[in-house]
Length: 340
Image (cartoon, rainbow, N blue to C red; front, side, top):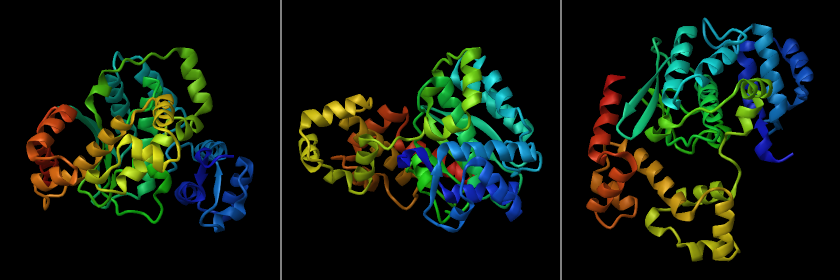
């Protein structure tokens, strides 16, 4: 069993926290799901994604809630099916998300999501009536449902540029970064997921048979199929994030560092639908969003950090990426912070 097909036991503990706090009852559910209850005491233990999916189903049945009893109203059994059926009938992914988020806003009391379009960016922003933020697992479970359905409708992974969360960073985040994005920001004024707006124009092409299969396999298909795979591309992205963009290697040097030829590097990335230049651009976009959210960094400093020769080159690239200049984007971000 490869690690990419497993889930940390930390997430099992999080799932049980509110939905099944009784230790004996939890042990019985874990056994039914095929999970060794003794693993709860092992900080680094992992379980099969399929077993976690079975536990999700069992907890949903026990509480009649597909949201782990983390909301006063919750999501009664059949909510995911109804959400997916309504969303797949829409002419575009953007309209499908509007319908899905509207449904979740009606069903849930503490999370009120809305899709906000900002030039070439789109944000799924979660409004919260409570002053106290929820725990990270609550937000990520919400993202798992919304992002999982969106990916299924599109028939491919929808890249996540960034996720901001109101809560403080929990002790464990590794699986969240693999499932969603390396660019997770905690302690932010509001909770939101940022994607490229052009994804909203994608046309859902799902049939009734596709829906039946999706629901039969959920949530296991969401947990594994649409997360950021443990691939060469992900390894390269991780390595790029560890160094200043100005010092990134060219393709030939990278291939040498990976003990392969440049042609093999290109071929393997092509098999994953990637190019090295595309990966560098992707990481630069993530870093640009992260650093522009820091009001203490000047735009010139951000351009220099990203490895651009001058600010004008950075402005040109940013407009190409997002359809607006970096100063305008920073204003949107800081205004959003002030309104939270």
